[in-house]
Image 1 (cartoon, helix red, strand yellow):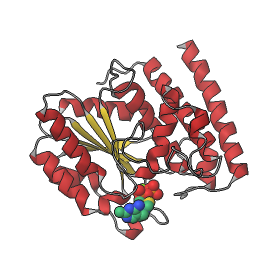
Image 2 (tube, helix red, strand yellow):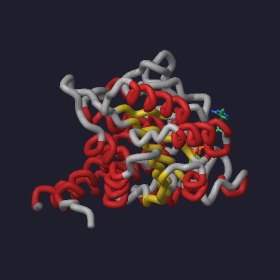
Image 3 (spheres, rainbow, N blue to C red):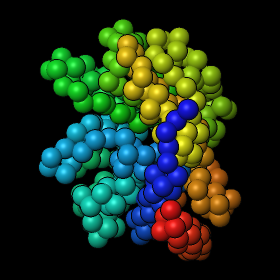
Length: 284
Ligand SMILES: Cc1ncc(C[n+]2csc(CCOP(=O)(O)OP(=O)(O)O)c2C)c(N)n1
Ligand SMILES: [Mg+2]
């Protein structure tokens, strides 16, 4: 049985709602990967505000490796709440000359690798995890990648290596949203059953409801009990999960350009949700 207080879960639900609001605010300026950012907000809230430990300088002790560069929008939404990016800067996302790239480059605040060419994060994260262990550090490494990337061989080489090296300081988080740009993953090149495939490669793996704070926290807790292999969270999500009107209007939007009416409706819905959750948080 997990030890999860209602106040912890409510606080993270509120954080996820604020991340969703930030994602819309950023993307409505000139378009972006809003559907992914919104859908991944629950994972981001748990990862950045509960799971990863802080260091003395106000940054993170643990390390996050983003593999599918376009999901940077999730990190931007979260780091705005962390206070390490300002919304003024983030609103330059996707503008000519911006330092807030849609697909980040290595060294940009919050990003460990250059991630626009898909499929490379899992192997780089495995290398980082191996290096940290060799140095005797207790850092945990979290790597987010997508179901589309599962079609690339490098991912499976990384899983084989990480399992062989018993990298229990490595957690793979998969955005398993059954979408890869313009089509459903199951129609282009099916990847399921994903947990079973990683298990066959020697990892520990489980399916997670990627929009349930309790399920995500439970999986992070389970990952720490596994001492001899990497842990894989196969997070089922859907584009725009968490904002019903946008999910209904744009269910398969890999990228969203101009949809001003939808943006406004989405913002109104998420603002209502934030008010509701703030009321619950005050009462708990
Ligand atoms: C190596 C590589 N191949 C192809 C692309 C082009 N590309 C950009 S996004 C994308 C879809 C990848 O699937 P996924 O990350 O699951 O997309 P989403 O669920 O976010 O729509 C592709 C093929 C790329 N960036 N890198
Ligand atoms: Mg996908």
